[in-house]
Amino acid sequence: MLVRTIAEITDTDADIRTENWRSKRIVLAREGVGFSVHETTLYAGTESEFCYQNHIEAVFIVSGEGEIEDLATGEVHQLGPGSLYLLNDHDRHRVRPRTDIRTVCVFNPPVTGREVHDENGVYPLLTEATA
Image (cartoon, rainbow, N blue to C red):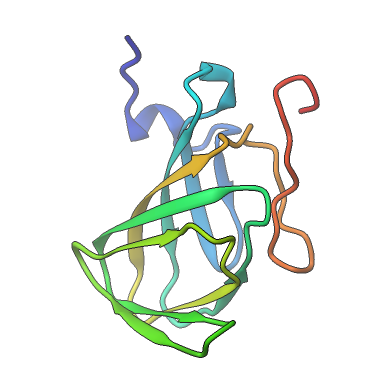
């Protein structure tokens, strides 16, 4: 059994910060469970474009409001507490938070915690052996 708190993650190497978002990686590939779990905060007034070509991601909105745009179709969906979006087709998307948005994200396959988005918003596929 693993029990871990956000306080234990804060300000460690599992706490990743950019100017647009902050992600606290709670469960990573090293745990060997087939997925990773992150608490991610997207900052108000920013715009971030992502496309996870190597991962499926589910994102549950805990607090905050904004929108997500499907860049293939141009569809825009409103996000708020209790919303979930699933990037099940490696969807290229743009997120625009109106307020800080706090989320819980699940990735499959799991991330190692060392991935960095490339110029297209893509994470490379890393394993514990390559991390």
